[in-house]
Length: 101
Image 1 (cartoon, rainbow, N blue to C red):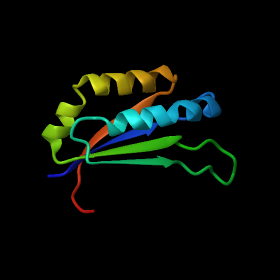
Image 2: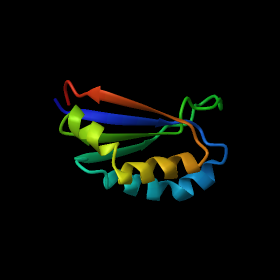
Image 3: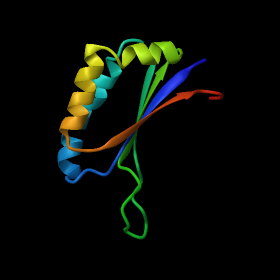
């Protein structure tokens, strides 16, 4: 069954600085072995001015769970996660079966 990894990136302390380095993070995600598609999204700001629940999402699509699991155990994944953690943000990662697209 197709699988995706969703990375939910929390609001950074310095959004402009984070955005400056984000293209490199996205590029590393696209180099993960077996990744079929990368979908990057920026969370809309709230109309009332309160903080958004997250800053960005990054969806990484794979043929199946085994391919996704293997990809996150590679040196490229290590570089990806190290770069993401180096920005100072916290994030949540979710593995999901794609039931319908």
